[in-house]
Image (cartoon, rainbow, N blue to C red; front, side):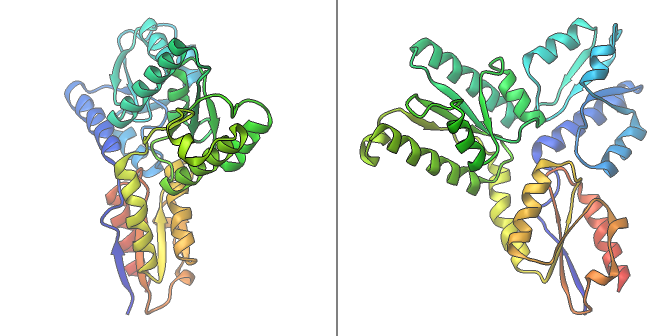
Amino acid sequence: MLKVDIDPNSGFCAGVIRAISKAEDSLSKEGGKIYSLGAIVHNDAELERLSIKGLVTIDKEDLDEIYDAGGERLLIRAHGEPPATYDTARAKGFRIIDCTCPVVLKLQKSIRETWQKTHLLGNGGQVLIFGKNGHAEVLGLAGQIGGDAIIVEDINGLAEAVREGRLLLNRPVELFSQTTKNPVEYRELCNWLQEMMMKANSISAENFAGSGMLTVHNTICSQVASRHSKLARFASSHSIIIFVSGKASSNGKVLCDLCKSCNIRTYHIDSEEELREAWFRPDDNVGVCGATSTPKWLLEKVARRIEALL
């Protein structure tokens, strides 16, 4: 007999919950509309629910075209923004509702302070960010220091940055990670970079540890990091996995790939409408899970539809 379980650790992360709650509270108190600079969450169903309440998503081009906002509210989502965005929004007359995740705010501050320190020391220190090029959070992080950061998505990107001379192995490196990246991949990238720097500078492992050449900052969200190990166990303990998230979600892609590495029968869907009866067997133990941008109500809706299929 088919059995369906919802992963208890899936659903919105604390940062997304906080952003949505602040948006709903403001809409409830003042009514009208709130403009969100970028999608508050990468999930079409949740965006539709919020749009009915009055949340309107705009992009940077829309912001640039606005001449006078006249005191309208502009929401900065959990991903955060560079300082220039705040300056532009205020100059155009927006009231800002800052929903930047506290974890991201802490990371932004750390990058600013580290960059300032390296310039004061004059040691040629380089800021390296492990993250997705073009991702809103990464743009906000790099924007804290005027874009003076090297961004790499993986080890191949790191090797390319070294080959092209954008990352110099004989100069100190301050390494940060986007908060939602895979902690295993981050550790592998750190180890690879350390090996390359030791070789390039002819330094033994013992001497390298105290050289100050490489400083690795632990900046992956602890909630996200723990979710990886828990999700791997969840995926392995079920015969089929239905992963629910928006296809544009960076975190969704990372977590879905993790599920696929543990369970070959993993299917990625946006909503219950994409479910196919042919995927399932009568005796399946189905696991339903999702990204940090997937609402619990949608996971429950998908689970009910699966139960109705067979």
